[in-house]
Length: 233
Picture 1 (cartoon, helix red, strand yellow):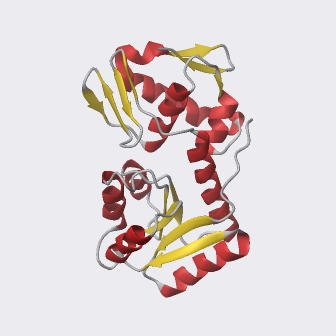
Picture 2: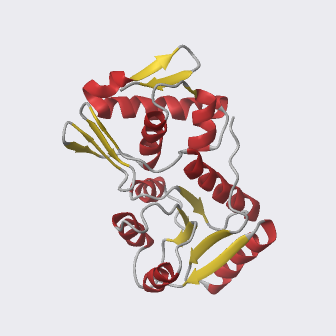
């Protein structure tokens, strides 16, 4: 498995309105890694900070005083300057529906507060490594399949497809390495930060859904024995 080096100083924007939680998150990052921190207490302040300096990652609370964090995430993914920034949602909401909604609007991960400081830092590093491992942001347009990496959008024969962030990352990884074998181990580590054995059921489910959405183009994702997959033009 290829290793990827993270920036020595990772810029993180923390968007949180509760002072006590803000301090806990700040303390966790200061004690567990090399992070340059910026802070916003609401959605408006978050975008002001973003216009001052673009971070490597955003920690976003859902319960903001001036808007819902989900709306902030949607707006981030709609703006070309910001849509590539990884977002981890931190929230007191713990229902499956809330988690699914957060991921569907473009969040890269989701943690329920209070969260363990070590786990928070591990999730940050996993998200950043995944983004880095997907390689340079490139578009693809060939034989009926079109991918906009910046917009995180996919079209099949001109029809836009609705995809979850993980489905998109899986497709982008396969397409970016087209013609080459992408092992299940590599996919598990890059997309989910887990071994092939740990991510097996999740990978199989996502691959099935991805192929279903691609329809007649699904045959371009070839299963190579038990080792992995190959995308062909």
